[in-house]
Every structure is written in structure tokens, then in C-alpha cells.
Image (tube, rainbow, N blue to C red; front, side, top):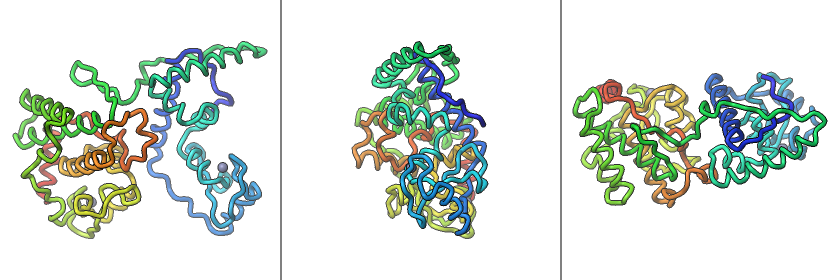
Length: 356
Ligand SMILES: [Zn+2]
Ligand SMILES: [Zn+2]
């Protein structure tokens, strides 16, 4: 893919935000297409060859690198042949591997933090964007041949975390709203599956609404739900993700390196295949990549852990806009907010039941 050599001229705040979301969306599509990237696995002499390309400095920021311990960038776009590999420091690598070239240009120009603010159209983001735009308009006017501002269809790139629920548009402002809305849906789905309903009915929607309001106001808590539904996940020996009963290993729902505990609630049995495929990817992201909706029981365990973590660490009231700056042990963007109809869940549930 060819990246534009310079950033486009933008003269409107809305276009600025939408352009950043467009790049974000494009990056996600590319990542989805590529699937999991393979580790490089270069031999010692190949590594040295890469190191010598820049005489041992980071090819992005120029800092000196240690020969035995340096990173190698492999761009999201370019293929991973040795010729493309270049030595880099750890922080540059993180940026280089995770963002598209045009996004990196924006990050270098305005900073990652400002980019996020503008992308999510926060109040602060709008202020920053308008200041940048004023500067850019001036700079553009001083050019020999001023360019035209770009124009894109904003409606193709809506702001994330705004969900349409029924006819009412609900805005998620805090971590709390996302987690409790998902949990309330889970409860609704659980009831519908138990009722053997094909579709959600009035009663199910009432359950969801009551629980959501109860959780938000603090009159209900997560433990009161599923009270007598003891988790079978921890006692029955089969893979919680696919139901296989052989070659089982212990898996951490929230990976240990992200702060997941070594306690019973966080431990499940998983077959070697699922464990290896999931690796350190967030559980919900893993299902998302497979284009599957997580089984209710798996989701239940996960949501309980995640909510517990956020309550214990006083994160529930935190704004979603700043969630990128908090080191969450899970990916909040993959928390399911839209649940499939129960007939699609039932199958999954029964498969799970039979194998349990
Ligand atoms: Zn660097
Ligand atoms: Zn499995």
C-alpha cells in the first residue's frame, strides 16, 4: 500500500475526526485480513545483518541499540522479508507495528493522546482540532499552490461507543455503562435461553432494563444475578471454549501478565488448541476475530471478573474517552453490547451443555 507523502489539508473539525476514524477502521480491516502475525524468528547472523543496516541505531528515532537486545519493525503493510526489517527501539516498534503509516504521521504531528481525543470527538478534542485547523489553514495559504481541503462522508465513520438501542440512542460515557449494559443483556439472554424462547419478548426487555437501572443506581449488584447458578466451568473437565475433553490445560481468562489473578474464578480448562490460538489475546477480541459470539457461560465468567476488577480498582466511573490511558486488563472495545437473538444463543448453549 502506498501512503500519501504528506498529510491532507483539513479545514473542518468533523472531517478531521472522521478522517482519523477512517484510518482506524482501515487499520482494523487490514489487521483482520492478516490474522495473527507470525513471529519473525531470525537467525543470529540475520539479526546482526538487520542491526548493521543502521549501524545499530533505531531507524525511527535514532537512539543507540544494544546488539543482543533490540527490536525489529515489521510494518503492518510491508511483507516480512529480511530486506524490509529494520532495527528499532521498543517504543518506536510499538508505534510502527500498530498503526498505519498515515496514522503514525498524525501521531508524530499532534501526539497519540490528542489523536484519540479528536477521534472520539471529546470536548477537548474539538478544541484541539480547531486550533490545529487554524494553524493548518494559515500554513496552507502560504503555500505556492494551496491545496483543496479533503472532503469525506462522515456518516461512514461514526464515533465509537455510540450505540443505537431500539429507537433511543444511548451514549456510553463511562466504563460503568458499557459493562453494566453488557451484563444486563447477558442476563436477558440467559433468561431467554432458559425459557427456550426463539426471540426476545417484552419480559426479557423488562429484565434487562430493570437490571441495568438497578446496577447503575447501585440497588443491585452483579453477585445477585446467577446467584444459585454455580459455575460448572471450574469443576467439569472440558475445554470451556470448544468442549473437548482431551489434552486440557489450565487457562487464565484474564491473562496473568495483564493482572489476571491465579484464583479459581480466573482459571478454566482449555484444550491445547484453543489455549494456543487464544494465547494472550483478550478473550472477547479472540471471539471477535473468529467472528463468533461467546458462549453465555464463558461470557458470564468473563464479565464477572471484569466488573469485579473495575470495582476493586475504582474504574467504573472513569470516562471511556480516557480508558485508553488506563491500563485495563481487558479490551473494553470488544465487550459485546449487541446480543444475538436467543435462537442463535441456544444452539451454542446446548452444545456447551452437552459437552459439560
Ligand atoms: Zn526509536
Ligand atoms: Zn478447545
